[in-house]
Image (cartoon, rainbow, N blue to C red; front, side, top):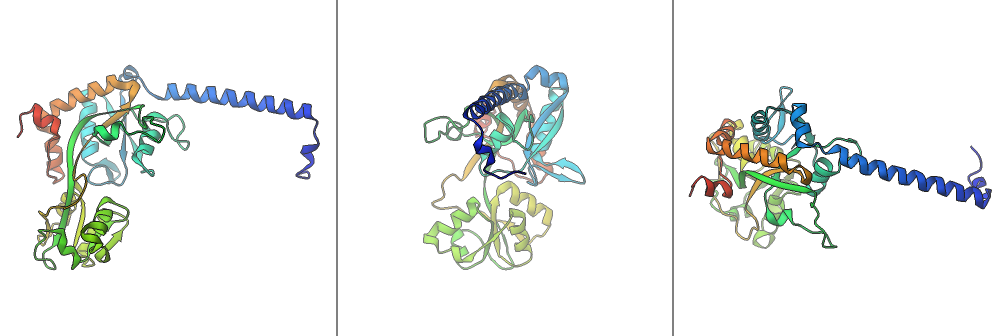
Amino acid sequence: MGHPYLHRKRSCQAVTTMRQLLAGLCLWMVCALVQAEVVKVRAFDDIIDSGVLKVAMYENFPPYSFMADGKPRGVDFELAQKLASKLGLKVEVLWVRPDETLDDDLRNFIWKGHYLRPNVLADVMMRVPYDREFSYKQNELGELINELVVMFGPYQRERWQSAYDDRRLEDLSSVAVFRYHPVGVEVESVPSFYLSSVFNGSIAKMLHHYPTAQAAFAAMQAGEVDATMAMRGEIDWMLGQAKDSHLKPAENAYPNMGKQVWELGMAVHESNRQLAYALEGELEGLMKDGAVEAIYADYGLRYELPELYQVQLGEN
C-alpha cells in the first residue's frame, strides 16, 4: 500500500483517461442492468413451457403462508397451487421477508428484483391489496409508484377482529373496555396505532406490544393480557389452534377507525397481463364452485367473498 495521497500526483491526462474508462464502464453497467430488467420478467409462454409458476408469498405469516413440517402451507399457498394446477403448472415459492413498505415488496419481487437475489423475480405475488387508491398511488412528483405492477384477482375480503379470555373479561362488546383491561397487539401495527389513539388515547396505557400477532395471542393464553386484536384470519386460525373454549372472538365495533374492511388479490408485472387474465379466469371458476371457500374452511377461517364476486355470483 502506498501513501494515500500519492495518486493525486498523476498527470491530468491520466486522470482524464481514467474518467473516460469509468464513464465507459458505467455506461456498460447501465446497459447490462437495463437488459437484465427485460430478461428477468418471464413471458406467459415461457412460464407455461417451464412447467413452473414462481409465486411470491410472505414468510412466517400463518394462516396465509408459512412452513410446517418442512413444507409450504397456508391459504395463499393452497390457492396458488390450485390456480397453477389449472394451468398445468407446479408452484415454486419465493418467500417474501417484508421490507419497509408494500411498495418495496412489489419492487423487490415483481418489477425490479433485489440486489441479494439478482435476476430473480416472481411471476405473481399473493396477498396484495385490491384497491384502486393503492394501485394509483403517486409519489411527490406525481408519478405512479406502482406503474409497473398490475393488481388483479381479489380472492378474500379481510377485516379486523378482537379475541378475549372470558375468564378475565366477561364480554367484549366495545373496545372501550380496554381502558380497564390489558390488551396485546403486534408492535407498529394498525391495531397498535388505533388503540393508542382512540378515545383520546385513554387505552394507550393498557397496551402491551409484542413482535407478532401470534406472540400477542400467546400472551393472552398466558394471562399477561385479557384480549388481543389482529386480522380476522389470524384470530380465527389462532383460536382454532388453541382449542380453548374460554378464548372467544368478539363482536365489537371499531369507532373512528379508517379502513376496517379491505380486499386481497394478486399482482404481476405490467408486461404480463396475459398471466393475470389466465389466473383471473381460473380464480372465477374456483369461486363459483366453492373451492376457495373450502380452502379457508380447511384452516378454520371464516370466508367472505370480495365485492366483485358478490355481484357476479349474486350474493347479497
